[in-house]
Length: 440
Image: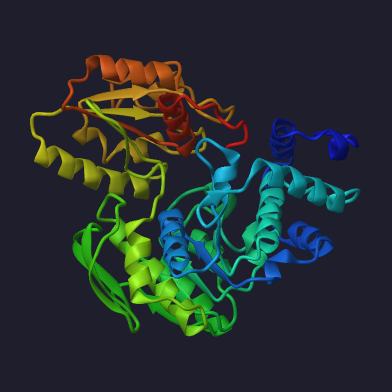
């Protein structure tokens, strides 16, 4: 962590290094520090309406769709998501544009001065405050916020939103959120506020019951997928939305995978609730916003001949969704081979993650993202020796991609998954970009 020289000597690289240094504080669940820090800079998060989106999977795609529709409606829109894939600035956007390097420097200087001498914000708390501060400075009309971890004690949970959404509930981050679906649902439900409507995605029992009980306790109306709104079709490229009041046929969204139908439905239900509360959105804007939405790292094709696809799935529920996509890909191309490149963090569950994927792949290459908490390829192979004795190990993502390409024909598929950090490294490698050091 930089000392008193921070204010006078900061460059963008040293600013990012300062933020990286905040990771030494780890993850501290609680709102006292973020509230105190925001209070010292004028509570910027209270200067614009907010849509707040949590859940285990799908929240990032849902946030990106909602932001794109709002922007197409003529609003100035802040979008805060995490983690980033390549560049730290991906986390904080206004109308799709990443926060400029100069504004990162300015914001960090202001927040660093405000936190001294008694506050020690974590990386995520500091970054969240930076986003709120930047959105206020840009005078956004509305901000769309993705919850970072959990919900109840997540730094984003200081807001009083127009509406909230919880997309899915699954086992993930058990060390922080609990080891049961019910415990995780309770943490996710912590973003529900009194009288603020909540959109629920595809959430099964008993998680839905936990969330609905929380909503009933605080008087928050609940709008549920397939009961109050739905999206139907064979793919997001051509589907029909039936919502609270909006009906739209032949809606088109470029994001891949049938699971995006659920995320699309949740995003439009949120938009409808925002519209009821004074945020103007037209059906024309709905169509235009969805047609132009972009969300990297989710069933994203980043190379051809062979096809190279990256997907940031990192828990069993997301792996099941990826498996559904790969099964369809194989049915359409029975002669083609599928190679899977996998890298995971040490706190994940590789056997459970790979269970639905292994029957669909011809080759498995295990590697390690460039992070201390990433499992090595050798560690993963040891854990998988009974399930995938054919697995190969590559020391780095670059080695893994070279190994997969060497064995692949032009018609084959190479799928990179298991970690958004790994996805970011592969994308940076293919684009010739350097990675921002802060990627947690």
